[in-house]
Image 1 (tube, rainbow, N blue to C red):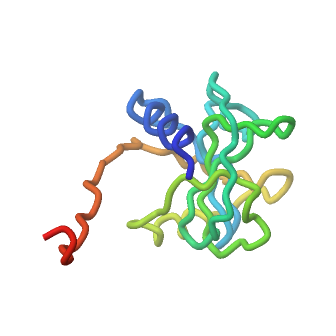
Image 2: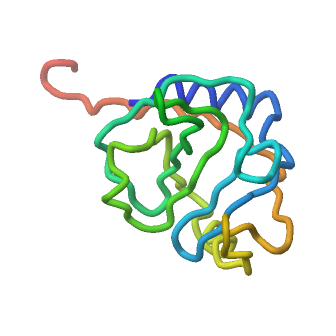
Length: 148
């Protein structure tokens, strides 16, 4: 449901954009946010593209794009990893992925001491080391009478 967002994230990751960036927000058992080249929560990559909003349930591990602008809605490089269901966010963010391994580590990061105000910035710097993309083949359809 978010082909532009996924392609842009993959392209940025493959170009090394996310490598070494600060995680700029951590709210205990709620969210972890990154993808801002300034490390403040106020910066973006130089590219903006339309938001791709969909009625996808937001559950623990959902990876969302943090809007770069609201009029018109636009995305850039910032992302948020949700650590709990957020039904009030459905249809308001571009959902571009799901953490399938390592959610326990994201939870630990969310529980580091933070400044709490204004932006829940971790008191000690936490950097992404490297973002890598591993493509998986689509699951093959089971054989049925019509495609045997």
